[in-house]
Image (cartoon, rainbow, N blue to C red; front, side):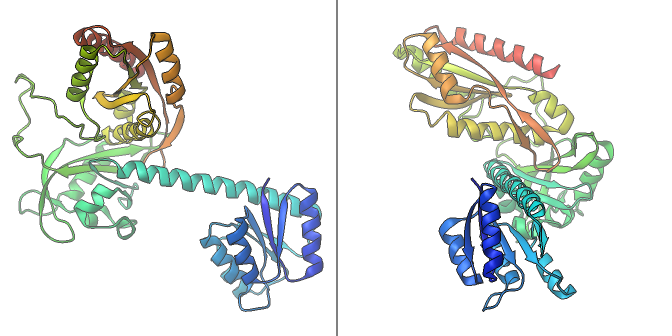
Length: 419
């Protein structure tokens, strides 16, 4: 049941409020001064505070409300007629509503109900923003996102480290000031990337460039610019994915006809052990005859997301799901390892169990099966559903056979998701 703190120094008014809110089902507590109210907030953490603007004592209502907002307690002001200066001060504390004295019971009920509802939404949005930031900060590549005008809206931890800008410093700045890219010792080409991505509406080809951070010491990086679209397919901003040039790679793109090089041990996007380590784990499981099982998680709509919003957004979704798997799956006592298999796929090894039916049941319990939920990308305007299709494979057959089965399942699922 929501708890409401009533900060009112007129005892009769306070008791009236307490009685009405109690009848409406709210838990209440009373305070007659700003100091008492802040002490009550620390003890009880109310969901909402009704605050009289005009209070006697060291703290008036506005000063108290400001402190409450910093403690994540939303405020509805109780006020009679106030002068313009007082109302301007009150606006700066971002109250959810004003309740004008004398108030009626219906107006009190409606105001409090709407304020509690709005406060709950704001708290959930903050949690989602914190989750989004945590996910982006786990990316091993640097990600910078802008609004349609080219002003920075997101700068993940890796991007902050490479550019020398903190996110607080960069927010609202033009991307050309934060991400200074050039070819050799030439002028900045950042604006050119902006024009290409926003004008053509297509992702740029990854380019080898020099990044000049705030420190001034140039670094060689690879950078790719992509447009971001909202649900109406209107340009919502741009994303820049960049990172240090990988050592030992040729300056020119490899020849497609050339033989494939060995796969990296760790995936560059998620940081998980890659397919080569997964293959070694499958081989060891088969050799030990340990009655283990592999679960393949194939992200739905990954390739269609990449085509519509760009690879940077698709990689955000990939990392979001990777974080979920790391927290929910890798933490399970029966999980023997989590890997990035390939493309939109993750592989986890579980067991030991005596049958495929038991494995399917137990894996479903610890993975919430699909995780169907919405994910807000770094553009703050594209809301994408995140889910995955899962299939469990026993590891009693030879690894090449299991690998073929998993790749066939993955191919079938990605074709469905691309349609």
